[in-house]
Image (cartoon, rainbow, N blue to C red; front, side, top):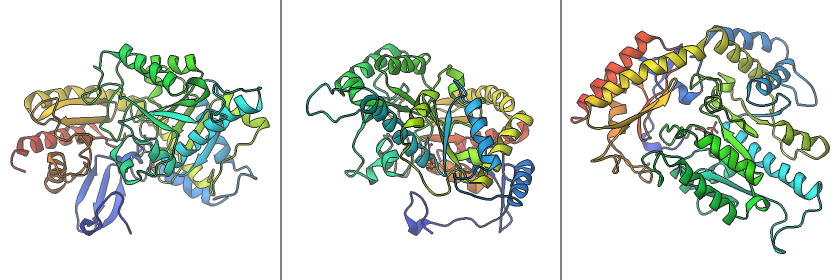
Length: 444
Ligand SMILES: Cc1ncc(COP(=O)(O)O)c(C=O)c1O
C-alpha cells in the first residue's frame, strides 16, 4: 500500500495486534498512546463498547441500501445532525465517506444553490456582458486544509496543494489568515482583516461572482490556531452584507473535539453549510455536508446535481449515532472542556520553562505546543517548509521511541489531541513526557 504524503522507501508501519481506548498494542509487545486520536477520527477512543454493539446490531438488519430506500439509522442521523448543528433544524444532510468528499459536496451544493437563486429564480443580468453567468468563486484562507480531492485541494492554502499545481480547479481565491504569527494582520486587528476581506470580495466581483467563504473555525492541520476575538462573527456579518454563503469546515473540530459539539458554538455563528467528517463515523468512513434551510429548499424544485456510491451507509450511520450518544452519555464534552482548562495551565508552565516554545494554543482537547526558531518571527518551520526535516519531527520521534507516545509531526508544533476519554492521570504523564522531550530537544 502507498502511505499518505510520504516517500515510500521510508515506510515502516508498526504492526498492531489490538486497540483499546487511547491505546494501540503492537505485535512486538509495545503499548502506545495515540495522542492524535487516529488523525482525529476516534474522539470516543478505540472500540467503544456502545458503538461496537450498535454496529453489531445494525449488521443483523441493513448494512447498506441506496437512497431510494430509507434505513432508520441514516434517517435518524440526518435528523440528529440537523438539530444539533447551529441554526434552524430544517436542514438537509448529504452523506459521503471523507472530509474531502463532504467539502466537494459543500462547494458544489453552494454553487448549485447560487445557480438556482440567480439564474433560475430571477431575471438575472450579470454586471458585465462577458461575465460568467452565475457566481462560482469560493474564498478560502492560506493557512487551511480541506482535503485531497480536486476542489478540496484547490481550496486549501496548505503546501500539499503544490502537488496539484498548476492543475488546481479554477474559482478559488485565498484570503489572509485570521491571526497568529504568520498572518499579515496583528491578532488584535480584526477590523483591518475584515476590511481587507471586504475589499477582496469587491475586487473579485462581489455577489455576482463570489459564492461564499470557506473556513475552518479553528485552523487544524496548519497548526491549531484559534480565531481572534470577534473575527468569525464579523466574517459572518460580512458574508451577510454581500449575500455570500458562510461555509464552515468542522471535519477536525466537530464531534466534541473542542469541548462543544461544534467549534462554531464557541463563537455563536450559524453557517449556511457545515462540513463534518473524521470522528463522525467513529470507526467507519462517514462524512456530511449539512445544508441550511434556505439552501436545501432550493433543491425541492431544482436538481441537487451531486452524488456518489455508498452515500448514507446504514452501518456507518449506526456507528455515528452511537458515537454521538456516547459523547453525551459519557459527558465527554464537559470532560474535554474541563481538561482543556487544566491542560492550558500545565502547558503555560512548560512554555515558560522552555525557550524553544514560542507559544501554546488550543481549546478543549485540541492543542499544539508551537516550537520557535530563533525568534517568534522566525518560527522553526516556515509555512513553506513543510517537507523538510526539523526539530518538531525529532521531538515526535523521541516521544514515540522513548515514551511510547504517538503524535505524528509533519506540522508546526507538538500536537496534543488525545481521544476525549483520556484520563487526568494519562494526560499528566503525557505532559511530563513532553516536558522531558523539550529538555532533551537540544540533544535529539
Ligand atoms: C478541516 C479539514 N477538512 C477536510 C479534511 C479532509 O478530510 P479527509 O482526509 O477525510 O478527506 C481534513 C483532513 O485533515 C481537515 O482537517
